[in-house]
Length: 246
Image (cartoon, rainbow, N blue to C red; front, side, top):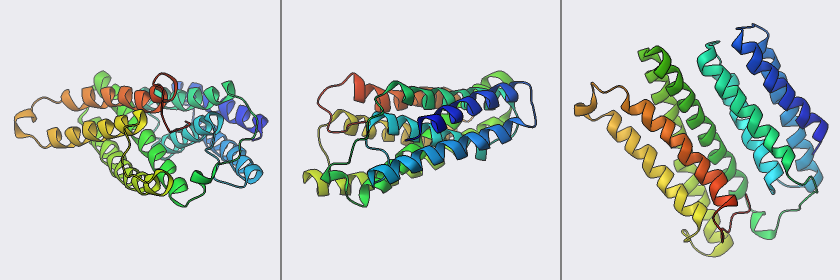
């Protein structure tokens, strides 16, 4: 991976967050430049290893940062109370990639299947959409504008759809790699818990008795981002015995 490109992407994302703070019209262009630089960095890594570039923690954090930046760019409306924290999260995630070893790591045989490049991007897309839902929740807590609830619901629903597809692809990949759809693996268990959390979110959203309690969905969206952090970071660093390397 071109570390120079990744550093450039982080700098552009951070600058975009600052620009969004002051509602600069150029901030979105900076974020778009960061997306291009980060995409090029990951593409160069993929060409170097001859495989989908999410084989190490460096690549994983860079890919998640790219997913966050893409969703931030696609959902950009100029509202700083939504955009600034979301873009900062993308920049911090991308910057975290620089903390890990840069050595090229070639994928083992279990990653050499079509289900691997299907499962991982779908999961990262869901993470990014749920982060967008949490950012919309943060904006709602400040403005109490019902429009934020509509955006929050949309992001949460889209993320749930991608996550469900990711779990299906992951289960098939599990059969190919380990001979089982489900393993008592920390990341697999937390993935199921995360699915249940957002399934509950969608159920509560349609519960008539909660119609007058607008705070419930923003609270669940914020809590969901905590569960995402546990599922993605916690299981990789604090729970031992996971079959997932990232």
